[in-house]
Amino acid sequence: MDVDSLETIELELAILIRRTTSISSNKKIGNLDRSAYLILHRIKTKGAAGVKVIAEEFKLDISTISRQAAGLEHKGYLYRIPDPLDGRAYSLQLTEQGTKELFDYKQARLKRIAELLEDWSDEEREVFGVLLEKFNRAFN
Image (cartoon, rainbow, N blue to C red; front, side, top):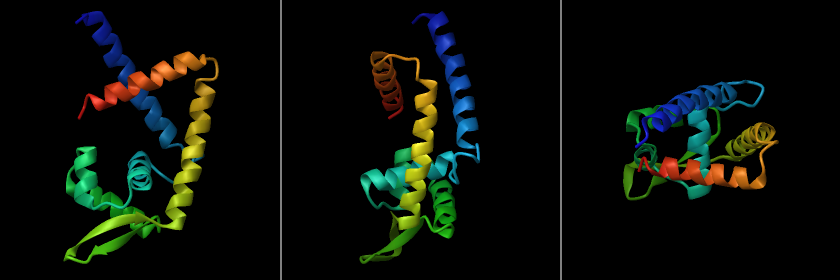
């Protein structure tokens, strides 16, 4: 592998993560942080799930997801669905408020990303999306 390319990718990823985090933490965008957005988005797209399943998908500790989910439940964005076979287990589902907050936050993020990519061609945006997806899948 070309060392110069790897060094460029490493640096640009660090910059991307920093800038993306600063966009996500900007209170003008909404009430969600990155972890809340990802949990709500996961449940919206794949359906109700338990903390263990979400933790495995995100490669995080169960305690981390449990703490984040508890915060989202406290805000009224999630509710628990008890498992009829195991009284201790439950799945998480979005509330109407959680669905609305997720939609609003996602629209604000999409608007900001569209602004950043305004001068890119359709082909460049498509290739960038494909390569980002490929890169993210390499972590699995």
